[in-house]
Image (cartoon, rainbow, N blue to C red):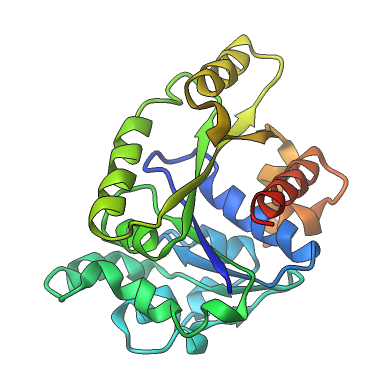
Length: 254
């Protein structure tokens, strides 16, 4: 049975999409069957895996609306063992459209029931907000990975996110776990980066992944070619980091 992991943080620019795309690709090369769900109207995870988002007619919007089944919205990617349900800018409208629907927080969960067993892992790339789409992702998920940027405001907003997760556990999804906190954009030359790592590990100890995602030029370049870091430069530090993270996730779930 597939495990659903949401990658969430309401702060923008912390490496959510980079993590979703590259963790999916890394798990794929480790021979796991992966579905990536792009739940961000910016659709960066979709374009980052080479999907032509202008040509999308079915995707996350339609499965949240329940006008198509999740199975009908799946697209294949060039990344081995990775499928995607892509997003489009029209996903912005779904929050307004769902607002007066009954069980609006459970739309994604219901859609995924029929395909959950077809994959080893389903990864959901969440938008940088705590709106209704992210709430749907957290309600559908078994666990959540929280990327934290190794910068000054790293812990700002984390309390708010953890409170949201607690209220989702209380009201919508008692089984939601925190898969782990992931330190991203680490620069070993900066004292500040090292201080953030120390601080996060001191406060959250066991919850923090051992793998740290380092700042890497190749990681930034890969999306412009519509490729994961594994496809773009398998020998780069970024690829090494995400393979290490994938192995850690597999070990944790073995």
